[in-house]
Image 1 (cartoon, rainbow, N blue to C red):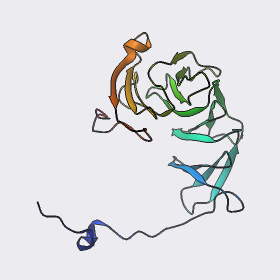
Image 2: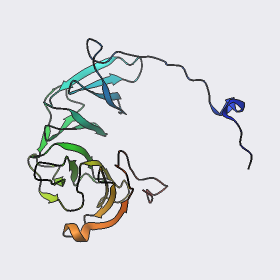
Image 3: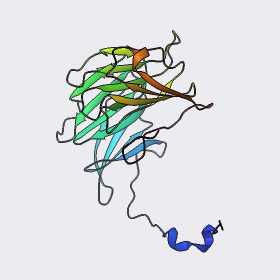
Image 4: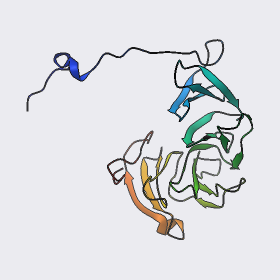
Length: 221
């Protein structure tokens, strides 16, 4: 198989130009942690513990959400809901159709939350925590219909920070976790306890920063 240098295949790499841009934060000392697409534009989490919302065209700021008291570790969008997790031990959900800066639901943990996801059928909220002073790294579960503390906890599958949680988009009872302990784990919540729910473990040999499902039916990790 012959290799084609990138410089000889310019048609594969169209020239891109920024259509619009906007400053984030104040004073030039704000860092962007994550930027995601929403139905209304974009959401950006920053080093000031804020989430900034922008419209599609012109990247004009729409609103700024300031709720968390520590680093915002992840943001997600599901239809008209914005969700954020934080090292302050909370996952907050906002209804983007409402102008209020107060979250409509808040889910709490005794540990810093580093990652989370909502199941495909919105029946369970899953969060991964930082390794705490008791050397426990937890996967916690909340009922999305009722704010408060976790209704279930897995504490034996990982031995370090749970950096990634992804619910399978085609199987509401299945989810994937990744950790700085190097492990990727898949679970089936149709099973009654952690030992039975743990379906597959892969040791990557390195700290897991990102992971996810892929393939036509999300059958690969």
